[in-house]
Amino acid sequence: MPAPSDVPIAVEEVVPGVYRIAIPIPAPLRDVNAYALRGPGGWTLVDAGFHTPEAEAAWHQAFRQLGIAPRDVEAIVVTHFHPDHLGAAGWLQTLTGAPVYMHEREIDVARRVWQPAALDGYAAFADRHGVPDELGPTLTARRRKVLDWVAPPPRPTPIRPGEALPLGGRRWEVVWAPGHTDGLVVLWQPEEGWLLADDMVLPGISPNISAGPQAAPDPLGRYLESLRRVARLPARLVLPGHRAPFTDLAARCAELEEHHRRRLEAIEAIVDRGGEVTAWQVATELFGRVMDTPANVEFALGETVAHLDYMVRRGRLQATWRERTRTPGTDAIPPAVAAADPGQAPGLSRSAPQRAVIVYRRA
Image (cartoon, rainbow, N blue to C red; front, top):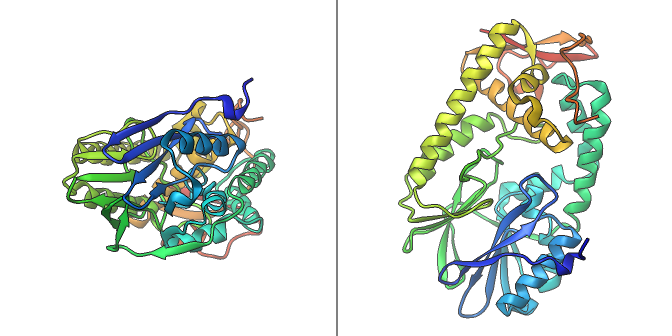
């Protein structure tokens, strides 16, 4: 196997002065799009990838290809706290001395999520949504590994919605678009019609919208509101966080909204068939063989809970506590895998049996 520094990476000038850099990530998507914006006095980097040896090598290669010296980097923007976007930001800040900019809410979320104390919170979240006991240690181990991929943390400077940032010789407007995460921002360049959309709008795949122990209430509702607002931007080119740039922003936003409408209907049908089901039972029926790694199990569970919570809040489903029992067949672990506070859902009491799960049924 070649050393990380010997593996070529893709660096592409997508529009004048804006370069897309494919940073390899240890995840099914295989890489994340970081961007380098060239300005008259230096460079701005947008997003960072996981902090891994492969990512470090990719950044060094990109710097060589673009003729960037570390001192040439004026700013680093992190669009949201997920590890494929935040992870190497602290290392890049140490390398370049540049400030790291993040939404003020996302700074707080990152500090709470990426610490060992948060592992117990996720374990409790998984337990109360019916994840089998034997799978819990695997999920915790995966999240513990991610802590290594986001260290060292950056020293971020907060940015606010509506703020205009001088990046790469142009002024980019900070647009807050919560849902995928609570403090996610996209960057809008109105004169050129360019949108740095990170994971807000992706081509060909739907961004993961997850509930979790540190997530803000109603993530799907917030995402759909953000989607409708972003769809109104007169973008001529969308630069996403994964996969290739695309042009028809409004059409893609409409497709994503329709995707979630269909997913809500599919979940309602699963609840109708089961009568009273846990999020784990819904997730295994909804995603099935896709839940083939610990990461995909986490994504599937979070997405399922976000959709269930959306329907509880709008009176389509009810959520109640039930004493946790093991029912053969319903809690099976997918064969390839050997923030919502429970009190957030309307009508769900914060008091529960010592070992209980949340179950959902028709309202």
